[in-house]
Picture 1 (cartoon, helix red, strand yellow):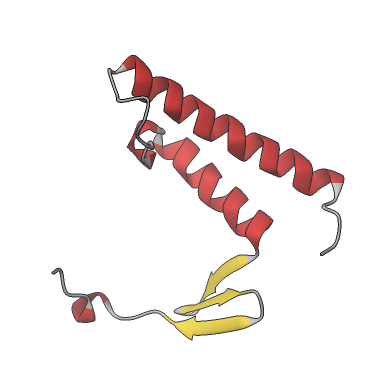
Picture 2 (cartoon, rainbow, N blue to C red):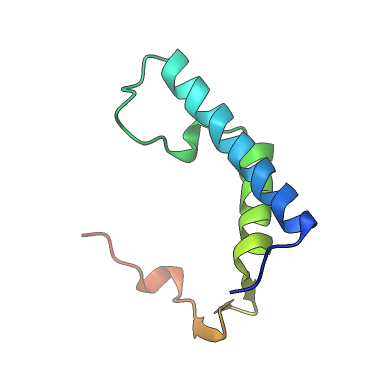
Length: 85
């Protein structure tokens, strides 16, 4: 595994800052400190930024209804095919 670049380190640090903000908001709202936080404690802009950073850092790309990650790809299903349990 190769060493991350300075840019990747900065992106990862920013992603951690976003998650720390979400955790702080969750705890300020009375959340249980032993439970994980979901992304509902991020603003819409922060959510978009976190998704973009995650895609850049971890190499996930969605293009033409296909997901590309770590040398693999798969087609996304249609919304009509998704069934809730």
